[in-house]
Image 1 (cartoon, rainbow, N blue to C red):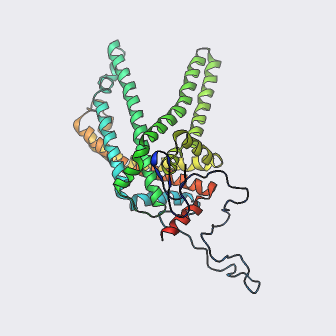
Image 2 (cartoon, rainbow, N blue to C red):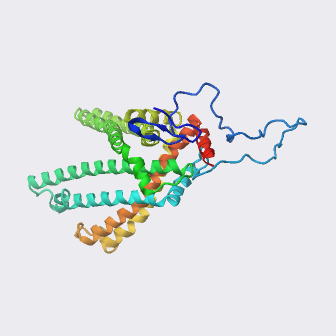
Image 3 (cartoon, helix red, strand yellow):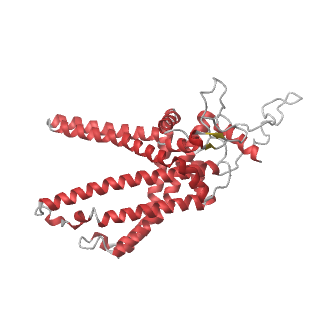
Length: 381
């Protein structure tokens, strides 16, 4: 694959894709000692050295001289990013590119809510119709229908979440690729950027879900088998499940940047997984902490946005705890659906944008991507 060059031109990727300037994966590891040092702010382009001695033997600018200029053509400076810059940059993407970011998120949210509403009125209906106080007296067929419908609805919901997440993450990654360099991007351009890799994105998300979920599923099955052996087996099974959950979190973080690599580097599915693993390997704890903080912030904002719609749909706060209320009432469904659309439209792009900026930060730190991006940005000026 031919990578984008540092002078602002673009290389060609597989299947005729065009790799954005400066985003190509490195051909190999840099020679020892040649990578950029991030103990101090990196220098962009030719210019005077602030540490070089002047004609009289004293520093040209001295210790109190002017600071180095910082190149920031887009939403974040072209240097390794701090936590606040990742979060602020994710919000900045929404402010500068509302149509592609919020527009695509709104379309995905509308489709997701429509499917979820359909599930609630069909597959989940037998479960919701069961009287909690008379489950013991319910017929075997009613219980089987309720459990089968719940499992089917859960499977469809997981599949829908994987697909919608893949589409939105890919689209926001494409937007971030432009936002970092301060380039414009319309709704149509964002969709055109992600469309050629859409199937790969979905396949990548499904594969990641199978890897992470498979670890947990196998451990739970093994724990159930161990539980049949007695108290000792139950204790061992609990330890096995806890260990599997920790392993699943570890694997999820190691693979979290794969969609960003797939979109911006135009690599294949397996290559994207390898790229994410390599980028996260030496900075796992930091990546984990940032991703966790992003999830906490997004969850808090989502709850704040969703609760008013749920309250309005229920009629009053007290009726939320009334077991006789009609869960599938038209008002509840409509207002809950509107709340879900609003929440997903505003929160999902923030999460995806922060994930894409974290990928940019890791490449800047590990591969000196800021140098290539700075050259691409300078070439456009």
